[in-house]
Image (cartoon, rainbow, N blue to C red):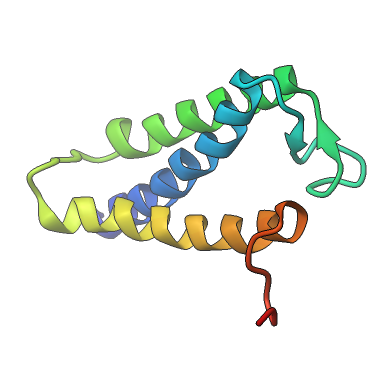
Length: 109
């Protein structure tokens, strides 16, 4: 079932994108929002928690992209699947984290 591979690539791109802000903030020694904070997704987690959460997201993304199906970096449709997951997650993260870090938020002018 090739369509299942595309679903996997989409979510793999989303997980890989979510790994970036957590891992980078953590390695910079900065606290950042995570699902483990109180309240979840709004409170700040330690830099160590964010490094671990970022690494976990990267590992899941790797498995979903490179261990499910037969991902081919030269296949436009495969790369588009990952890219769509990445851009959708990127926009969601920008809107979500923008509320806390002075970025654009929904309804802001």
